[in-house]
Image (cartoon, rainbow, N blue to C red; front, top):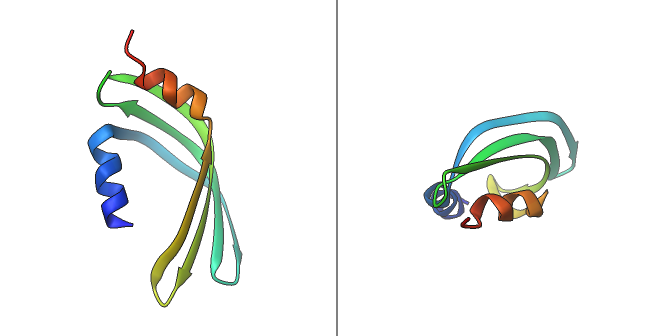
Length: 80
């Protein structure tokens, strides 16, 4: 998880990360919220709602799924 976050930090800068709802079922949590991000290669920003599904076992993240508007993210990374 740390490595994934480090790679993401090289390509994106998070301006806002607003978890609005957290639902827990056993070892899995669903985090629903909003984020605003800058694509570092272009300097362009995008905003999107997101849903993260995170499964934790023995104190370690064993599964992470992310759902968001990939179109707006791709547009922010696309060179003009």
